[in-house]
Image (cartoon, rainbow, N blue to C red; front, side, top):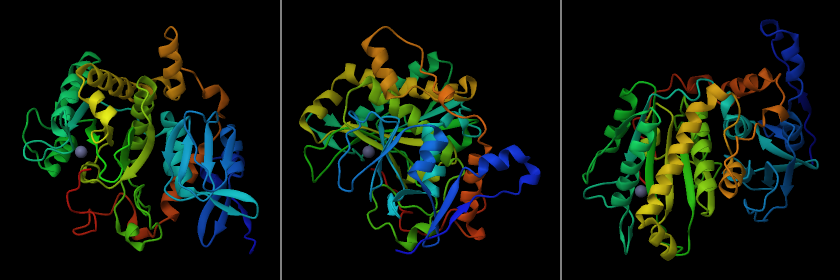
Length: 398
Ligand SMILES: [Zn+2]
């Protein structure tokens, strides 16, 4: 096996001072076939969090994972803070080390572990709630009813919850009619300091037993979506990224941990997709899949209005925690915190900040450099217009 040099990461330290240059040296970029990787050990040391890599093919259960960071060799599946989270690229092995791409450190691990450090995170005046489907577009069906109706009901329940917390709330539809996806995105884009939260329910034609929650934010530039299996395709590099990628991932984390923490459903994970509403929104945006209408037990739960009220409440807490990130300056509550809280008397969120090092502007540097280095100059996130035609330019709603 060819040994690649381990490169100490050096900065133009003039502008940032020597302390940052020293911190920066803690990141050791490992080049593999021209791509930048970091070892799991390096990541574990940097965050001062234990990390484990389980063998290829192993299945990890988020419920039993007792480590903040757990990876599967050769896989994109990971556990971050006790919730399943999907990396853009698989973990690889090189010279006895498990390696994670720099893209995933910057785009997945950092915003999920420390959403409170994402620049401009938590700026929310208006929450744009988007009940999926509507009118002729029924979405998934169960014996109890249609996705479009359940989604609208959850959003109707969520609106007063958010208003009571002081948010301005706009709904992309108020009744049973279809609103074009680009119009939904436009509503979000035209509101000041808005976030976009789309509510859907799932269905599976292949697996009638499929259950659980999942949440999506827009796939980073140059990366495959979670559902893409051929991850070497050049097509991904043609896709635009999002300038609010990290904020959307932070929003995903806040809402998803609240969902799982309040409602004991199967953890399908924090995922990425290029759904039209996520692609067309220019503000932090997520799409929630609140369970499967094609599974007997779960479809019955979804048909229960009290359960939907609970779902709406959990989403509301997640949004509130997202807004609190820049105020509290500490990680939001994670699934274990919520479960502890619901088991006993309410407790204060666990402050993990004490266990995380302060001097790490180096990571911001890495995040910034990652965005610069992973793509040619012509594909800068901020300067690339939406493509006129792409494999995913057609309106897609899960
Ligand atoms: Zn849907």
